[in-house]
Length: 126
Image (tube, rainbow, N blue to C red; front, side):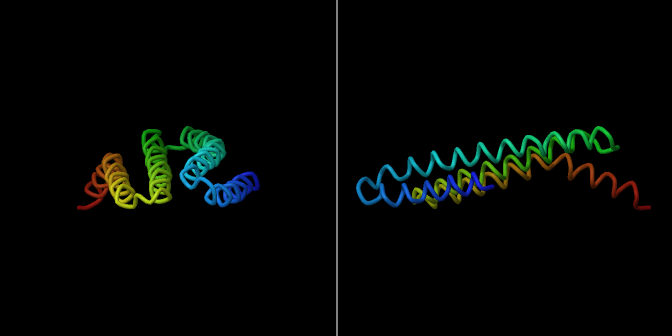
C-alpha cells in the first residue's frame, strides 16, 4: 500500500508542477500513474483469484460461479478505472456512458447466477 500511496503522491506533485508550464501533459502523467497503481493492484488481485479458485476446488461451490464473480469484479474495477480517467480529463459525459455500459455488462454476465438462484428458489417452493 505504501508503494501505491507513494506513486500517487509523487504523481500529484509532478502534475502540479507540469500544470504550471504544460497543462496538456498532466493527463499523461496521471494516466501513467494510474496504470502503475493498477499493475500493483492486479498483482494482489491475482493472489485473491488463486485463493478463490483453491477454495472453490475444495468445496462444493461451482467453479463456474467463481469465474463469473471474478469476471464481474474485473468489469467493475476496469470500468471504474476508465471512468476515473475520463473524469480526470474533463469528459464526464463519456464517463457516465462508460459507467452505464459497465453496469449493463455486469448484469449481462450475472444472468447465469441469477437464473440458477431462481431455479433453486423454485425447487424449494411447494
